[in-house]
Length: 155
Image 1 (tube, rainbow, N blue to C red):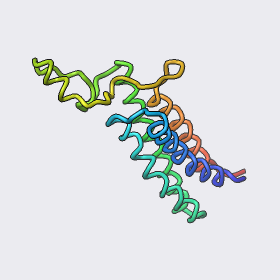
Image 2 (cartoon, one colour; image 1 turned 90 degrees about the vertical axis):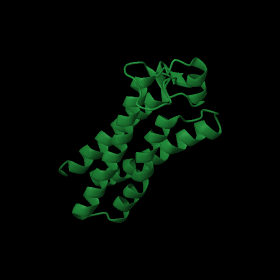
Image 3 (tube, helix red, strand yellow; image 1 turned 90 degrees about the horizontal axis):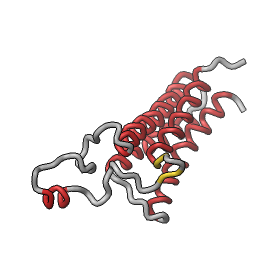
């Protein structure tokens, strides 16, 4: 398999596998997404058709450009995952109302205004890594691989 063939495969498989994992954990595992979880899905949703176009338009600058775009979209999901994981680990505050950081002075009002699924509390972890953290790791690894394979000169 060529570098570009492998890049196409990774660019198509990564967002599909990541979205499938998110949807299975949501609908079969009962792990309902918060607002930032949805944000992480958006670039993967966009990467699926872009990667498909890269497969259909195999050669030339357009095909490579589509592969680079798919890699950047996957990387964007990873970057959102880093931000979300940082909110979960308390490294920084979230920018949405799905984290209990604001205090209006009325405790009951604060509780009622907070969504049921809080962005700052991971629902599941493995070895201390949340789903947002795993998305960041896998998305960055895939994106770097796609970008490297796409710009690398064939031997």
